[in-house]
Length: 193
Length: 193
DNA sequence: GACATATTAGAACATATATTCTAATAAAAG
DNA sequence: CTTTTATTAGAATATATGTTCTAATATGTC
Image (cartoon, rainbow over all chains, first blue to last red; front, side, top):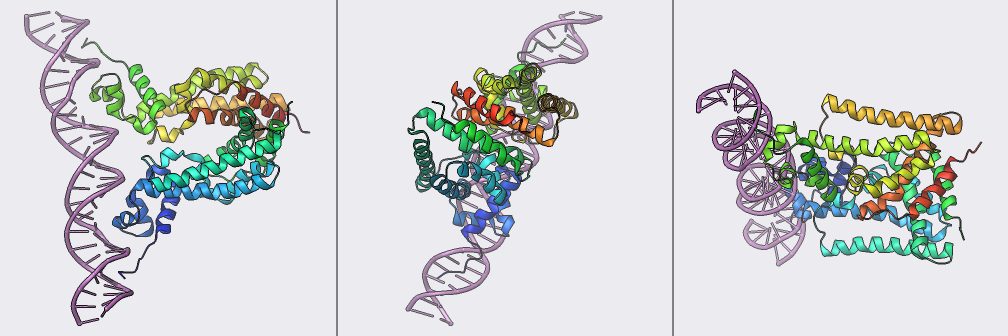
């Protein structure tokens, strides 16, 4: 019962994501989000407890989008597939990439998260840690602090660096970055002892 | 003539830098900056045209601090010295490093810069470009788009990536990152043809 | 010592924006 | 057809913060 909805949660999250990607998180005002889809500001609060909760939904969606594919590449492949996932995902998802790689979580969500969302976020980072550790153990035979650091550097940090420059310019990373990432990956992951 | 100053420009810039490094640029309110050194808010405006101008001074100081040493390492050495300058500078200058590597210029300075400061900023980025180009030419024999991209990746982007994770955690990067950077540098800068 | 002025001092003002509140609507249930 | 209620609708409110304004205070100059 009750009146039919003109808008749904997705639309607000989409609008916030679009604005954040294009103009940065500070431009995501409630009025801008509502205006983007022609909704009244009251409807934002009808659907989300606060701006922080809306932004947290944006972050969770973007992070999950990146990570699902990343982890399956990591589980299946030799690692280089996971390293190359970053430039590929960035090409495919320009807006999401800007949000995930250009801003830190605390910039998007200033205040504290509701318990239920905190759980979801924690789940995401735990799955990533587990995937990395498992891969390091598979590659180096053991997964001590240094093996894990090397792995993180090769398959997360370096691909991130390779791609960041282009994201900042609003461009898609060129194919050549895959070659750079591959060279660095091979050099770093080569067993040294 | 006139009353003696209790405060000077440096102190306000220092205060803004400290707050930005510790709590992010959004925490750099005029009241916070003034409060940090026990000055009245009016004195901030007596010395700086606006918050943006103050933040621009912060950025210029930090950028110059990083770049002066970086460029002299690049001019003298074989490139690896420049690549390793990043982790070393970060260890030496934790607060400045947070500002330079954690936030983009537009986050620090939202509005437009006064012409004179714009010149200073442009000078900084031009010197960097020139240094990189010169080094690429010296290393590869020529400095086409791809040679320059490779060079930027090896001596700027990768070191940045190696260090970022620690900066975010408020830690100093461990010595091991120098080894990772070196491996990647050698792999990337090796002439391929 | 009186004056001019650079600077401190902090209250007042303007504005942007998150949030709340009250009312209007429309659809389902009986 | 009346009642109930989910939702739209947007005006009103509260607050934070950049900026401006007016006054007080020292210090050098005559």
